[in-house]
Image (cartoon, rainbow, N blue to C red; front, side):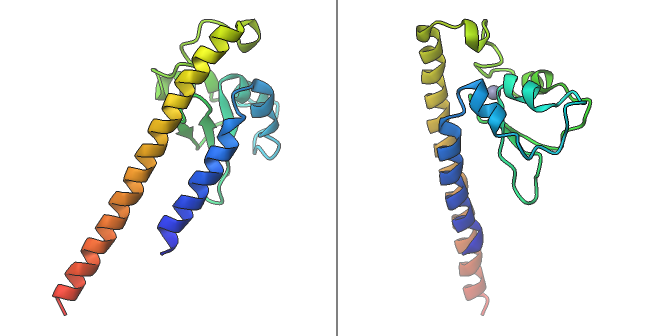
Length: 150
Ligand SMILES: [Zn+2]
């Protein structure tokens, strides 16, 4: 059962964490165990300003996720520019394409982005459920095949 249960738990934890990541301050606070220091391009302040928060796993200690489009990136190099990486991997992201910094936005502009984020969140949730279902279906299909061959 391991794999799909693990996925289920981590998806819930991901959603809880992601909810408060719509402010740069909360994203910045997530980088306390970030494996890069302030002397490189992918320093925490630039990562947070580019929309990313840190969500490490045992296998991916430098995994980050965009709070807006939920794109996940790992395998960072000290020379990587966070905003350029975000733009090249998620060119349609509403955060990447915003016209103003968070501090210059009106409340209405902030909530317009928040509405887009919630739509993305739901789509992301549905896509993850489809992946889990596909994984379970494939596993069950294999079990049926094994039974047939006995
Ligand atoms: Zn994004």
